[in-house]
Image (cartoon, rainbow, N blue to C red; front, side):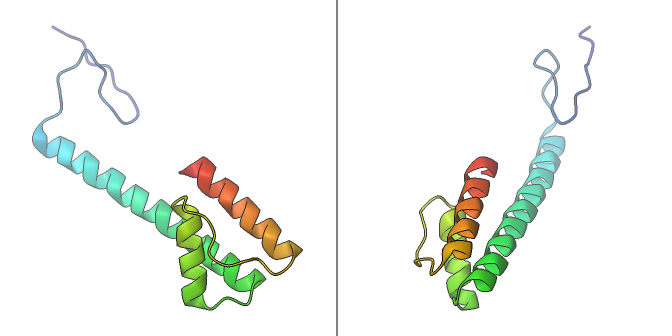
Length: 97
């Protein structure tokens, strides 16, 4: 009999596969985590762009979403604080995602 080793999230390669129900439950749990992380990251970007630039909320959403997805910025940053925020947000987006 193979001894099961408990890990933080996944089964060991020598243990049997999860049941379909347990696998789906785990996938849903990680989808919730990912949705929360993406939403929080998008909110940080939106608030930052709204605070440091003259962009509207919709334009802030678009700029944050484009940076977060790796497409690049839409609006030109008007001053140094906005450019610094934009650079830090781009680094955060690239490292986290």
